Image (cartoon, rainbow, N blue to C red; front, side, top):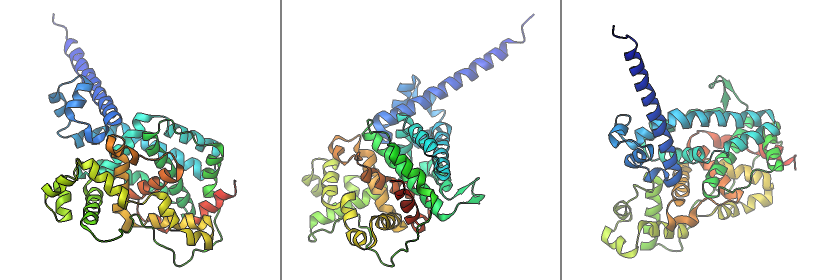
Length: 376
C-alpha cells in the first residue's frame, strides 16, 4: 500500500529550501551592502554570495531596488523601528541607563547599521526604493512627535529633544561606517541626552538671525564656478551614480568632451568641486558668531538646528548625505568621509532626520539644549 505521508514530507522539504534560500539571499544582500555599498551591489554579486543562480534571484525580485525593498521590509525596517523607539522612549523618560543601553545596541551591529544608512540615503534618489524604504522611514520618524501610531501627540519640547537624540544616533551611525573604532558615548554625553526632554527654556528667540549657508560664495563668476555648481547641483538632485559627466556637462552648459578634457575622472571632478564650494560644519557654525555673541551658545545652537532643518535646504541635505555615503567606497573621495568629530556627524544626523520628517524647524530646540546644560 502506498504511503500517504510522502507528499507532505516533499512539501515540507520544498518549504524548508525556500526559507533557507530566502535567508541566504537576505544575508548576502546585507553583506554586500556592508562590504561594497548599495551602488556596487548587484543581482549577480548577491547570487554568488548566496550560492544561488541569478535566475533563482529573479524569481524573488525583478530589480535590485525591489530586492533592497524586500530585505528592508524583512530585516532592516523591524530592527530600525525597534531601535528608534528604544532610544526615544529612554530619552523621554530621562533614563540615562536605558538610553546608554539603547545607544550601545544601536551602534553594535555594523552590518545592519551600514544597511540602514545606505538604503535610506539611496532612497532619496530612487523612486522604487522610496515607495517602501522612504515610506517606512517617514512613518518611523513620526515617532519623534507622537506615540501609539500618532494617537498621542508629544509636547513640542519633547519632540525637539527626540529630534536631537535621533540626530545624534544617525550621525554616529554614519560616522561608524567610516570609523568602526569610534568611542562609545561617555556617561556625561548620555546624561546630557537623557536630560533633553526635562525642562523648557525661558529664553525668547530673536526675530532675525543669519541664515545657514551650505556653500561658499565664489570669488568671481567663471567657467569653473559653473562646473562646480552644476556638479554639486546634479548630485544633490539625482545622486552620485546617476550624476554622469554628460548630465553635469548639460547642467554646466558645455560639451561632454570639453569637461572630460579637464578631469581624469568623475571622482576628481566631484572632489575638486566640493573642495571649492562646500562649507564644512565649522565654517557653517562660524556664520553664527554674531548670534553666539548676542544670545549665547545655547540659543545659537538651537537657532542653527532650526535653520538647517528648513525645508528649503532639502537639496543640500541630499548632497551632503550622498557624499558621506559614497566616500567610503571611492578612494578618490576618501577624505570626504564622515569625520569622527561630533560636530561633523551630528550636523549630518540633523540632515538625515530632516530628510524623512516634516515641520521640525519650528520646534523649540532651545528647550533641550537648556535642559541638557544643567547636567554639566
